[in-house]
Image: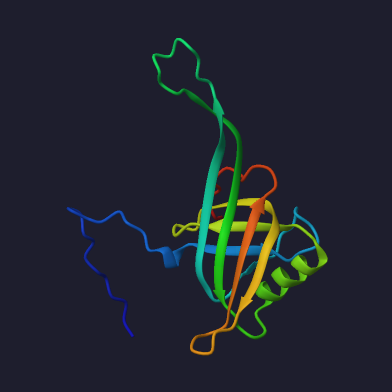
Length: 153
């Protein structure tokens, strides 16, 4: 088939991104220095939450208004994947949970840039409804900061 060139839209172009283009990978290598990024297969959702504790800085002379400062920060990923028999990412996730081990993850954006971090698996549930596909639902709670955004290369 010959190469086809498509017209690029310039005005009024949407800058929205599709959630399906955000992916979670797990480092299945023995070291962090030379990662083997294995896709967690069957992903339906991977919600990255970043938050900070609230420190109350209110005082008597604040005019009756509450004042807050950001405290300790944290991040987590709530995920749901279709259970795919033989999926290497899902098997590694379950094995790490059962062994009580942290995992090294990569959260990839649609442009292939990404952040990495270490996480504890604090939930790893298998849902098996009679009228739907089996899914793994889980929570990954960060241990320390996520990396700065890195470009694929």
